[in-house]
Image 1: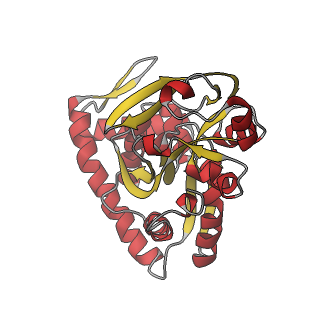
Image 2 (image 1 turned 120 degrees about the vertical axis):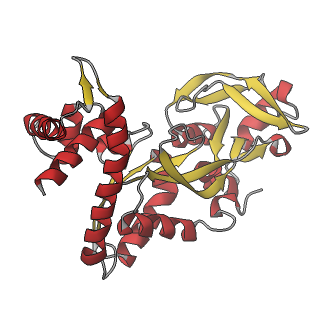
Length: 302
């Protein structure tokens, strides 16, 4: 077990590239992590990590050792899980979720999952920040849009249309845009959570067409943008799940639907593991079943 502790400490430092972050993840002191890694290197007679005041990186030997070490730890965890969780998934599941989707759609799913798996405890963190799952100790994250971290395993859950919309009262006052050139002249409500908030992309005859929008209201979140649109301050661009209720109720009207860009997707992402923990597998499978087929947020308003 001492050797397994050494290997776990080494993997944590290699993933986090920091002894301090690895200590947080393992819930031990930095000194203990440093001691375990040093003992491993001394026993192997090889340097696995390069240490500087600013960074920790793998040596060539460390990189090769890391690959084999992950297999050993995964096999050991799988062995434990086969005994500890043979009656079903259990234990603490730490989840990272985006704010708007979490409030609008994910919370009911989480409650349904909690009811279905009483032996699993949930710790859910809602944030639009791109968390580091390994470094911050999350088991799984729900993410929307383009995925940039290729080291994570991703499972596609559902499609999401981006909807351009405005209140009928605003359109009666400012006019309903029939073309992208007309849209560019309208007051935009800007969601600063987007990578390029003022650039709205559409599809024209199968080709992307970008429109640069301007507006005096900016919010870091789709819910606030939708609320501002309902209040008549301008045109908003929001994921369908954030605007669907207002669209169904007629408080917002969808615009230029024939020029919508490609759909984005909701994914469940988790760190790569040879043997996925039963609690994570159960959660991802549960979401996949729940969101199978045409999403509810696309129904009843177009």
